[in-house]
Length: 357
Image (cartoon, rainbow, N blue to C red):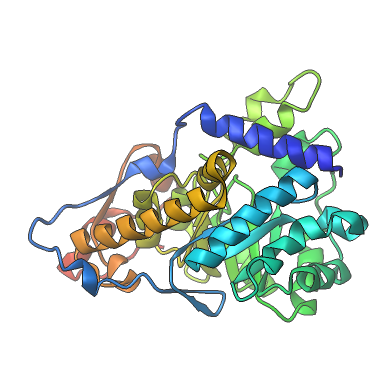
């Protein structure tokens, strides 16, 4: 894996953001408005707990990049913004740094610029347990994201086509590292079946990372001479569909994939996510305006999210998960086919018991 590929990923992901809105499962989620339910904003707390750590904000800078001079500069700006706002931050895959120590600093900058922050290292599921330990050590990481990306690998010109060893590899990683392991898709979603398998392996945390944001089929297909995998664009489930489809015994859930606004953050939190990862929306900001622009954007999102919870009458995230939510569109069709009952979500303030999985 080369630094050029890392630069390509940033360039192509930014181009997708610039191209504008895509079909997104978050648009299928509507809060029921109760005009007299609002509370004072100064009563609202946005604190959450992610992977056993209490954090001041329930959204975070999700895995993006590293591995070249340009992406190292991006990571520096991301880390500064994280330090100044208190949000958690995840690295891009550090695999390239494990093989090339010369680029390790492009990842290590996340910790160097953010010494007291909550930092997640990121590594592919196919890597060894020893590599996982090295990834955590490189960033002095508080948690390890292990990404699963079979769809991306399928389209990637130099990608793997061998996936059968992944569950055993993941089990070895979970057993080896002494920080929380968060299994993360890269934008194609984690199904109920997958979430149950993760729980059975012993995974305690999972980022469902659904479609609707950066599409790595499109990213990798642009790197193919014939652009011959266009038909796979849009593959997978949205974060919203994954949250609704999650089984009762699922790992503690985080959500990402196509998060465009504080409203999308509130939607994911209301459907059970403990935290919400943001990549593409923040990448565009940092590329255009650097660390200061992203700091301002994160601060604005925190203010807006506080206002939304006040509007909904929710003092904290637990109360937000009791607000009335209506799910329609393609997501409702998906849930009907999967046997997920959505009716209780729309009547939660009536105190009726929920049978949503």
